[in-house]
Amino acid sequence: MPCELCGRECKGGKEAIIDGAKMFVCPDCMKYAEGFVEQEPPRPSSPIQPQRAPLKKTLNIERDIYKDKGMQKELVNDWNHLIEHARKKKGLSREELGFKIGERTVTIAKLENGDLRPSDQTIAKLEKELSIRLLEEVKEVPAGTQKGSAATFTLGDFIKTDK
Ligand SMILES: [Zn+2]
Image (cartoon, rainbow, N blue to C red; front, side, top):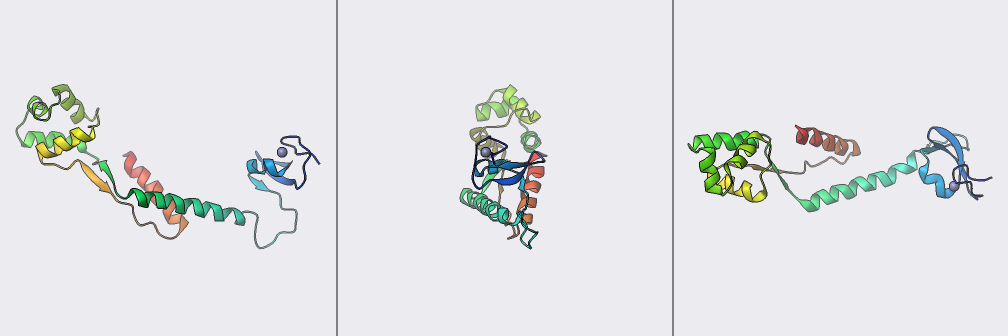
């Protein structure tokens, strides 16, 4: 029976679900399948079961990468307001602050408006000049051993960073 996807005559083909339709595919084309049509009578181990193992492995690998990177530093949420407040507290004009850290007044204005993200160098200068901390360490939340909690963490982290 030829593979309904690539048309090749194949051995060991299987009925698979592709794009929601039942198709007979060769082993090469099985990677496109969303699922397989179980031909034997239903057993306790459903066809979805074997696919879980590699998924778990991928998650573990991702977690290891996070671990290797250690802590990441990110700009605090209200960094631009922080700059403005700290500058005013020090009684500095945008011009004066710009002069101190070697940036143009317009750059300071853009930073305070949040239109421009400061470079690492500028961050360091601003922190020193204004005695503030613009970076916060984003620690990896110890994800539970459950796959579910790892996924929740990732999603929550996204929402947090997006704000
Ligand atoms: Zn094929």
